[in-house]
Length: 210
Image: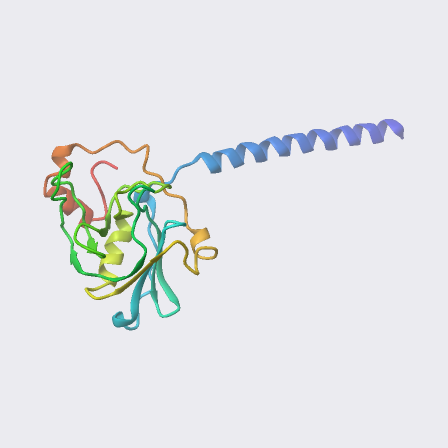
């Protein structure tokens, strides 16, 4: 009887150890896997009235919400301004839109800023860009490609924009969004980024060889 109990106890411990290490391995694989912005396809709920659509940006959570009254139409991770060049907080409106905009100033003149949605003042906009899980822009807001395309269609010149450190959906809808990180993606050739092909590819929902 004692022998049987000892063996059973030993077996339980052995099984427990195996399960524990399987959990650790699975957990590590899940946490270490990075999702790029090109893999993110936001769900969109069509608005009933475009005049009631608003943009709500949380700089603290780096999340953008497109809402119609209290209904979230689209939610997406974004990248905001660095501490020394923060994305401005306040109430704004969409000043203008330009689907195929390019950077005008140096450095980086000619670099694509597709699906440009200007706010605050010239030079500040929501636009396509490589996304990182920490603030890293000069004040603009970078959006994933598929998000940028959809946001561009949902807003119009005059759409209200609210930018604050927090938004009401950060701890609900925002927490369910994936963490996007394009840090390991190679830089596409500059010749490609300066060509018209980059815009043609973006319209198809792709970019270079990614």
